[in-house]
Amino acid sequence: MKSCTFDWNCVIAAECAEEQGIYIRKLVELHRSGVLDVGITTVSASETLKESKSFPASGKQFRRRISALGWDDLSIVLGPCVVGLSYIGLSKLADETFNNEINALWNVICPGIERKLPTSVSQETLWSPQYKKWRNAWCDVHTLWTHINDDRDIFVTTNTKDFQGNFGELKELGLREVASPNEVLTSTTSRLKR
Image (tube, rainbow, N blue to C red; front, top):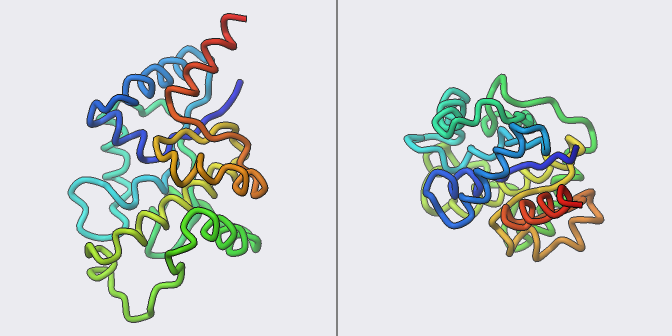
């Protein structure tokens, strides 16, 4: 059975009933029928959880949001434990290759955004509109690292610019496949018909 990992854009698409949300819900149905292993990373929620005032929001808020979608049965793919930026109890320790792997992914996905923040940046400043692009980049890179590190098959995203647009370079870093929810559904259902 193939495994796929939703990025947080998929959660937002399902919540907001966006066009791709229909396909996302069908992928969840395929998970429940044992055709696909659908997972969501614990990194994904860090930037955009509703009601959050600090970065990241709590693991409880993450669980509530997943529960509100009825997705408690999806595989939870633990992101790296990064002090101050990840959920305690919903993250895993990374090994000595972590920083090099994150740097490589960062350079492909968001080369125009400085990875290292100034030491003077407070939690309040980090949550400000000024650092929105940095928070988004951090979440994208760490979500993809989590998917690759967990040895999963298909990275499912609605963000075609950063992920599908850079697939050649990302494949060299361990990404097997990246696709939109519609593309995953189409390829999975055509494989089932054979």
